[in-house]
Image (cartoon, rainbow, N blue to C red):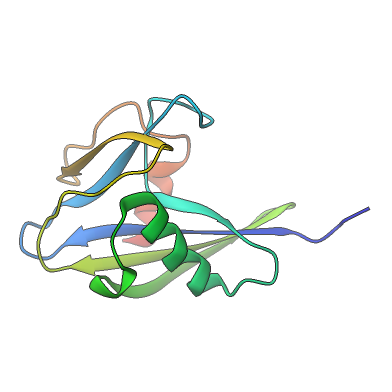
Length: 129
């Protein structure tokens, strides 16, 4: 029996020139389809947390992660999952090249978030900021 906890990481990407954040609309192949979420996902076994996060950024929005400046913000430990949150800064908005996990994206103001949000995303945003 494998008792090793899973690890995941996520990032809230914030554009410095517009002060907007990037959210992704989940596709039907994901849990909670058609909900807005952060860039996030499971870190592979024996993979460094930060490296796993940068891999997820590249997979989910199709940009090299070195365009984003990362700042570690918060860790959440649950019974079966450790989740690591980061805030990411980028100079200007861009059009993400989203993968099959998503059907849309939105640069939005924090005072006007879209609905419905993925469960727990609002609390994650508050913890990150």
